[in-house]
Image (cartoon, rainbow, N blue to C red):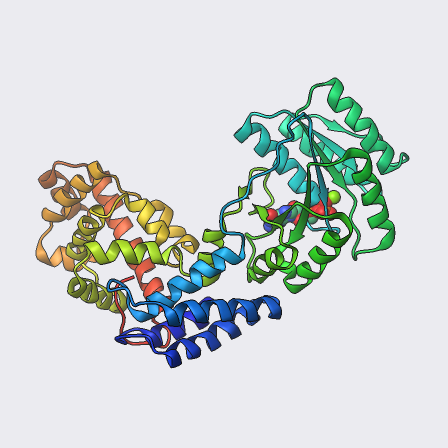
Length: 439
Ligand code: GDP
Ligand code: MG
C-alpha cells in the first residue's frame, strides 16, 4: 500500500494546485491500494467518495503542497474510518467488570487474555481473574494457567469435564467472593464460525451479562477477519475488537474494514507473542501505518516551519548519494534540535520504526554539545572521510574536544549507522521519482 501511495503522491508533488483530475487520478490509486491491502470493497467505495468530496472542495493551504494536502485528507479519513478517537475498555458501575474473549481458534484469545490481565493490573491497578473456559482445545487450560503463573495472577479452571457455561457460573461466584474487579473469560474457538460454538457463547453471555465482548481477530487473515467479525457481531453483539499479530507483516486492511463493517471500535492491538505486547489501539497511528509514512504529516508541519528548503534539498541529495559528511550531520542535528526531542522526531520519519540502527541514535542536548565539540576538532579531510580516523587521530580528537575516546568512537559509529539508514530511507522514498522535498 505504502509504495503505491508514495508513487502517486510524488506525482502530485511539485504541482501548484490540485485539480479535480489530480484528485481523481490520485483516488484511483488510493482505491487500488486499499483493495490491495485487503480492505472490503464497500468500505473502499464509501471511503473514496468521502475523500474526493473533501479534497476537491477544499481550499489549498499555503503551507502544504497539493500532494500533501490530499494525503492529509486521506489520512484523516482513514483515521475516522477506524473510529477516530482511541477507545477504552469498559468499566462496570458495579464490579466485577466481565469481559468475554471470543474469536476463532488461533486468533490469540488465550494469549490476549493473559496480556489483558497484565495490562489491567499494570496500567489500571486492577485485580482480574482469568477464567479457562475453553475445554475443547487440547492444553488450552494449561496454556492459560501457565500465563497465570508467569504473571503471578489467578486463573480459575475446573478442568475439561465441566461445561464452559458451568465454569463461567462458578467463576463469577469465585470472583465476587475474592473481590476481583475484572473477570476475563477465555472461551473456545473453532476453525470456522459454527452453530454449536455460537450457542455456547450465547449461553455464557446470557449467564454472565458481560460488560465487554471482545472479538479477537488475527490481523493477518485480512478480508476473512471481516467476515468473522460480521458473524460474531450478528450473533453476540460484540463491543470491541482486539487485532492481534499486528507485529507481523500485515496489510492492515482488516483494521480498516472491521470498524466500518461492525461499527465497533478496535480497542487493542497485539504486537507480539510476549505478555506485554498489547497496546491500546490508536486509529490515527494505524492510519499512518497503513499509509506507510510514519507521522509524516506532523513531520511535514514541523519541518516546514523550521527547515530551510534549499538546505534540505541539498541534504536529501547527499543522503541519496551517500555523501553525507560530519558537518552535515552536525548541521542537521542542530536544525532538528530546534524542532523538538530528536528521538521523537526520528520516530516520525517514514520507515524509521523498521530500522534497527535507529535505537542507537539517541541524542540529548548535553550530548549534542559534545558531538559539536568532537566534530569541530576534526580536520576537513576527517569530516569528509571518517574512514581515515585511526586510533591516534581519534585520541587527538578526544583530547582536542575535551571528551573521551569512547565518545568519539560512539559518534563515529552512530554516524556510520545514520548514514546507512539515511541511504536506505532515501532508497525507500526515492522509488520512481527524482525530485522531492525534505520529509
Ligand atoms: P487462541 O486459540 O485464540 O486462544 O489463540 P492463542 O492465544 O493460543 O494464540 C495462537 C498463537 O498466536 C500463539 O502461538 C500466540 O503466541 C500467537 N499470538 C497471539 N497474539 C499474537 C500477537 O499479537 N503477535 C504474534 N506475533 N503472535 C501472537
Ligand atoms: Mg485459546
